[in-house]
Amino acid sequence: MENLINKIKERLHLSSEAEAFLYSISNEKELVKGDVVIRPGQVVKKTYFVISGCLRSYCIDTNGKEHTLLFAIKDWWISDYMAIHSEDISTLTIECLTDSKVIEFNAKELDEIHTRFPEFESYQRQNLERHVVNLQMRILNQLQLSAAERYDLFLEKYSDIEKQIRNFHVASFLGITQESLSRIRVERAKK
Amino acid sequence: MKSLQVVKYGEISESLAFNETDKPQVQANDVLIEVKASAINPIDKSIILGNLQSLLPIPLPATSAYDVSGVVVEKGQEVSDFEIGDLVYSRVPQEQMGTLAEYVAVISSAVSKKPGNISFEEAAGIPLAGLTALQSLEYAGIKENDKVLIHAGSGGVGSFAIQYAKAKGAYVFTTTSTGNVKWVKELGADRVIDYKTEDYKDIAKDVDIVFDTLGRHYSLESFELVKEGGKVVSVVGPLDEASAKMFGMNDYKLPAELAKASSEKNAEYKFIFMHPNGSHLNQIKLMIEDEQIKPIIDKVYPFSEGIQAFTHLASGRAKGKIVVKIS
Image (cartoon, rainbow over all chains, first blue to last red; front, side, top):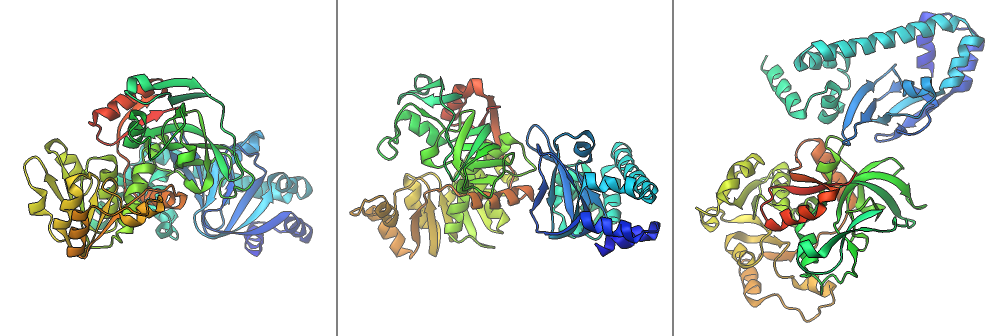
């Protein structure tokens, strides 16, 4: 929890009341590889801040194949925000790829922090903007970059965990086959 | 629910029918699977033809097939390793046979999550053939650099076994006919023997393991090829004595020629009964997700054409699995 508090303190003055409130609504959890925190079809109430490890969100298409939306590593938030926003059931699965430590929040309680402590408004807005920027970049990259270029960006972003993530997950994040991924890796090694 | 059932023994076209049956009840250790795809295997054909009546007395009508992929929609109170909504695959146990239906109840120990990188149709084709290959080669203690002969490399079991043996680092000989040489090679076999133009006995010598998927004279000939102290594992040859005992056949003796050949080479002969096993399927899941093994589908039929799928199976011309898409 200190990690998150310190990160918040970097960007805003956190009153002791707000800090106490954050503590009161948070639940630090140790998860093991393979744990599933959100399943498709369930009502989503929780959102997670990653302290260490790696979580993956993915959807399953009608043929039963998985498509990775996001890997959340240290200091990232992860949940099915579409489900939270529309108060609908989840379409995503969120699972632990490695043993992980997370802070679990009830999304509604976390939302309350804005009314109680208005200084969080701008902090949260910045968070959201970052998130949107990330998603926008991901869409644009998918539309305009080659698979090899997307892989390079992936390596930049996820250098710490690349070795721990299975090829199948990386390929499904990049939207390519594992065979293509292997080819890209071979080409890269030649450079 | 709609089910494709064996209604009598005999010709395929006359013995199968679509019937309305009750949705299966879930026992404490079962999961109920909404079937997305089912795959058929030679054993399903043998059951219909009545060839297994003495070994597997099945009261008719009985819903056909053992291989399944689908979604868990209900679970018994003792089931803790699966949740509603999990995508799974299984080779269901004998007493729960009947995957050519909208739902099947399966004991959870026979179930595994399905590989995430392949479709329901591809996943349905894996369990029976995959478990047969894995359990046979693991019984034989397959390890890196072993020389292995796998008969009938283009069959459902053979094509899986080649990939499994290669993933374990073995050197693989396999037999097939001229038309299949190329694609069997592509599965990774090191030496593909075209049995129409070559004698496999001249080529595969001193092998550590023979995987006999053909039976007949091939079981005995295996001992000409296997090295001293090697292993012959068979899924179609004669029973070995220990397996026969398990079936209560206490006086059973291995055919004399086979016993002699086996003892002369100090090489074990073992008949392998594939058994449903969720944790073995989970091992296969990981290997498929790592692309060490690829599913090979010959054709996918819609449920309404399930009987044609059996006719195709009976033709013996399929390269890879025959799958029936249920929903």
